[in-house]
Length: 394
Image 1 (tube, helix red, strand yellow):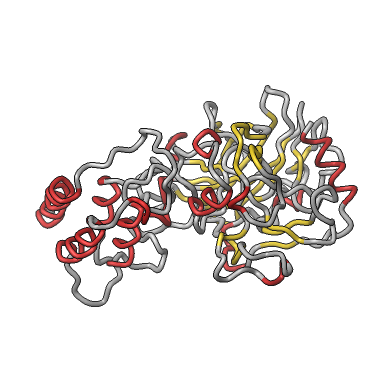
Image 2: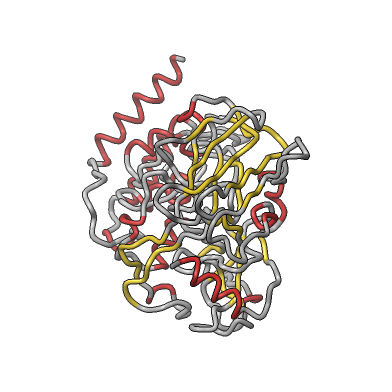
């Protein structure tokens, strides 16, 4: 069904200009779908591939903007790719197809199992999965008026990895290609909206970062009932994508990724395959240092049960709590060229934060019980003090 819809939408689209992210992340993308062995192709379209058989679509950078679908908005108008509106053109994605279809891509460098990659995720696969809309429609303009539904549209594909293109190791129990998380192409930024989208755009700003994963614990279910605005704020600078940790398959590095259709009958589509960039744990604002700015971000979101890296979730559970504060404390001062004191800054930031009511927290929707909020004045102080003592002892 998804494939039929995508084919119709593409035939209706008048403009086929490919719009991608800026090239500062270009080195992180898979480059070629052809084996070193010239006799073996890297792409074999399977049943149901239709018109979506340009394998170079998976080798270009992530699709940030696409065109209107002729139903809700004119195909002459550009709109951002968001979790409820996926990339759909033949120049955006390539379809693996069902049956014997496969796509094999190669990075031009080894993708490492790096402990400094956020949440342990080493590479990301972007498909065109999207989430249903419960209320409103898209594009409506204002993402605050769009509420996500319970259903995620995904056509999962098996993923295998290899160091030499000959010996393959499968992610036999998942994750899967073309699954959660849907792509967010542009950051939610009503202060600096992207003028190239047109006068209608009052909300979507610069391109997101395709090398920054979302917390692995997030899911379609956890986004159910949330507004598109809230979901985009959870993403922050992350573009989403399905994350893969090489530790799960016992490999230190890989250079090839193979995707085939799963037995559930879907025809997975692929937009891009990207190596994750390492980050400093605790660096919420991604400026390369861990300081009071990051502490302030964490404090502002403390207790949230739906959060990403940019909000202070460094442990990957989608929450901001004492565990994340401990990670930040253990790395406090990294990259700073002058002396700073965590205990002093913590007392200032959280001393002020404790007097603020819940309305100052960006996410005031009903808590789902997945995260607890221990008392800050005593529990956090003792926990962090213990971590600092252990660090000094080491």
